[in-house]
Length: 220
Image 1 (tube, rainbow, N blue to C red):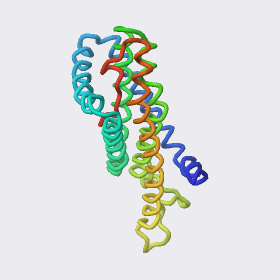
Image 2: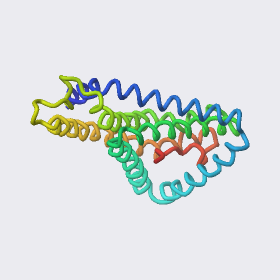
Image 3: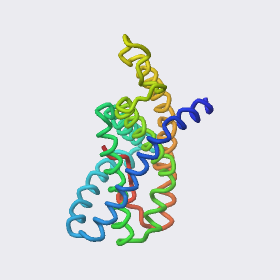
Image 4: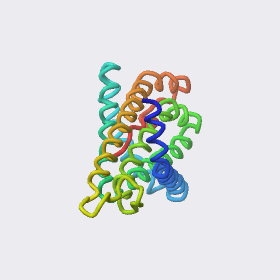
């Protein structure tokens, strides 16, 4: 199975890089907006915090098991939508990567201003090292399924095999590959949810700064 994942990830390399670049651009935009447009960003930040607080109540007010499942299902649905809606020319995955990056950049600057960068990093890194790769893989799937057929080369799985072939045979195989990779994101998101609900709060408690600002589920 590991060899299968390595092979598929190598095939998706360009799309993974593209998703990562979009995510990085989003972070940069969020940071720039927070620095140069603080008043407008503060209003947006409050809206983000309110949404995170509502979800955080569902996750952190009940049992840890229930909270972990709630967070996992939320993030899984978000990644699944990013991958599935990529069929529309990859527009939604691109938007989602920039949006999620911008939120992280914005929240990072505001949290650093209100407390410290260390607080923000301690609240995002423990689960983010698993959650962010899952997000990037989901976006890469959406980008490949939506954009790949537009640039199909003769040896591409999206290419037609003969004059009677519509290209669906290769595309069907790509859908199977996408489901295999989505299985990997399920594992990553499950582990990330366990860490975020059970471990991240303990780390943040060391800084006595635990708040909804550090909670970062995947946005839609």
